[in-house]
Length: 240
Image (cartoon, rainbow, N blue to C red; front, side, top):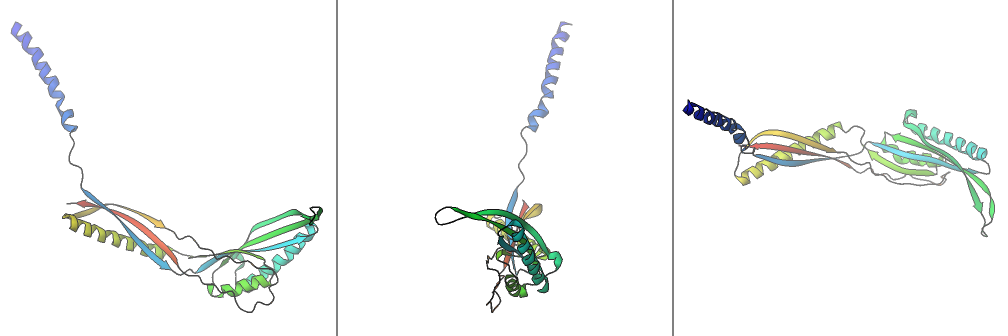
């Protein structure tokens, strides 16, 4: 009986130690997956087909009502000139209207009185760029004395982005093949794909002018240039 009592604890201890085995084995882990990650760039240069312009009327008057009345009249003339030039009414939107007093001072620093200033700015979408120069001239002749910027853009970037992404994938695939060949390994399946589209920033061409542009004989020269749409694609390949 004494021998049996002595053996039983040894058996229990052996079972406890055996139960610790699997935790030890799992902590060693396995070999990490072998992968190759490359990033490709695709870029498409496109000619803009749309422009956005801020056109404003600035007026001054001895009273607020005089300044507003003058501004309203000139703004109506401006909008008519824009629509007569082919701009749809839905593409003309008021973005700013402000009125404020301005104290006038003489050379001696003495106050001479108050002049009221009014600004009315419309945001114009131009869809026919061929006539943009003539449109600007018409706006100036109609009384526009503030043209803050001309922003060129592409109305629909869908196809350009699609082409840029395809070029980026091709570029990344070519890089992967070159690197695999140089490293002496073979590529497996693509296990991950990520991409980032780089939208072009509409660039601006500033132009200022005075109202009543008498003497303008030729259209304002406008050159839209080109925009660049880029896409970055990252591919992760399995290495065999």
